[in-house]
Amino acid sequence: MFDVITFGSAVIDVFVDTDIAEKKGFMAYPVGSKILLKDIKFDIGGGGTNTAVAFSRLGLKTGYMGKVGDDTDGKSILNVLHKEKIKFLGKIEKQGISGYSIILDSKENNRTILTFKGTNNNLKFDELKLKKIKTKWLYLTSLLENSFIAQKKLVSYLASRGIKIAFNPSSYLIKRLDLKPILKFCEVIIFNKEEAQMLAKKNKIKNKNLIKGLHDLGVKIIVITDKNKKIWAYDGIKKYSIQPHKIKVVERTGAGDAFGAGFVAGLIVNKSIEGCLKLGLKESESVLRHFGAKNNLLRMKLK
Image 1 (cartoon, rainbow, N blue to C red):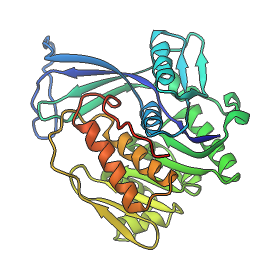
Image 2: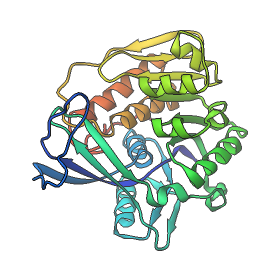
Image 3: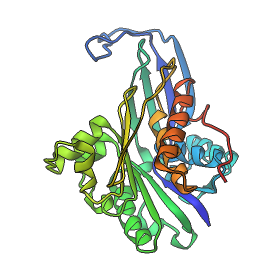
């Protein structure tokens, strides 16, 4: 029996530092020029693997569902999962191209991410080995196409068997798809303020109190982050908050995944919502202080 299984993307992350300063919210690169890079680094990323590693390092028995190619990048992803003691429950696609992300970092430590999903969006429901999916929790991150359809079917199947669902949808998923078939089964949904506002607008939520309005979609616990501003949670009875600390940010990639995994890990071991917020914040701030989405995730035993 797994404590948690994550179902989301797995990619090779390429961190590109051009030392370009932001101008009015944009990073501009002149057309036709050749730009020397200040630094370049490679790592394994993707919401599905980032959260899986976070859960495993917290001492939880963890599985990962996703699709990788039978290429060199796919092998690198599988090696990381094996090293982190995470059971691969997904599919390897012959002649498939694994996911790839290019992270453009600005001088101000913000970033723009260019993502090629590759095999990530092509995991079909009939490729899942349902007999091996014995878990207490399922944690979903954003996928499209066949993989999103598989997520919807799996959520319905598992929720009917008492398995708890956590969901961390991205802005592109909220823009493109109707998430209500998943939301109605969720124990917790975690996203940032911009994503929350987008979801509220798309679902025509008129409640001026954003977090309470989103709770009306059927999710038991709503959590909204807002960079260095207060993080809020609501369980239908009470609102909770926590203020992030003032820290030196080295790189932001993976901080949201770290927070989400930390918060849900707290729920898995029956922490209070206040305790979950503290653990999520501790995870995310640890990631923010270092390069890479996984490199500085906490190592501690919750069980």
